[in-house]
Picture 1 (cartoon, rainbow, N blue to C red):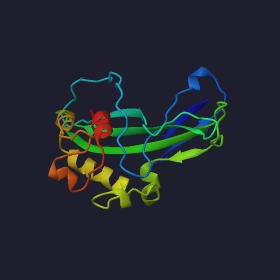
Picture 2 (cartoon, rainbow, N blue to C red):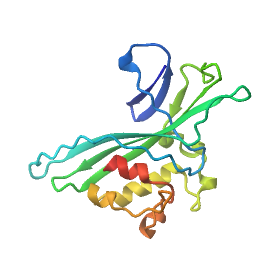
Picture 3 (cartoon, rainbow, N blue to C red):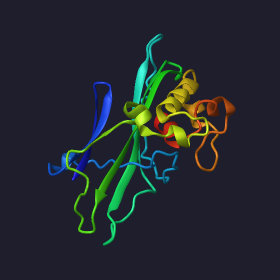
Amino acid sequence: LCLGLMAGCGQTTIIVNMGGDESESEITPAPTDAAENTPEATDAPTPVVDDTPLPEGELKTGLAIVSVVSTSSKAATAEADGLAQADTTYAAVLVDGDGVIQKCIIDCVQTKIGFNAAGELTTEIGATFDSKIVLDDAYDMRKASPIKAEWDEQAWAFVDYVTGKTPADVAGIAVDESGHPTDADITAGCTMNVIDFIAVIK
């Protein structure tokens, strides 16, 4: 059993597969319902950093993925199916020779895999999960947002805020105890949890 993260053609999809060799088995689940849930904190792996100086006028791109198991995950019982759920947040960040972000894109795939007490999948084999940018209004977070903004709108607002800053600046963004930004310049366009946004850019 594995989940494959497929990125290409401007769209990201998670595909549920069965079988295959061990090289294919990379599990990627996701949190939240259509609200602004706070994912459970996990230790992030050490990032691979390329500190090679750039020739003047040149740019380089950093890519990263952060997967967090959701607190919405639950065990199966005789009465109810279980759920394996996680958010996979990923970013591409274009920086100049001074490490200043010139362009950035952030997206997330929320994956929900059901299973019963016998350990059998109840999610259809081959089921796909579109990213939140692809889902747009179908993700249906607007009604839970205090600023009535959909997930992708808030993600783009966060991207606008970090453009022109360094990853160190982004790492220093102030958040409250639940991971929501506190700076009014951010909360005007983004009030959802940004812990994974900060981590994936860093």
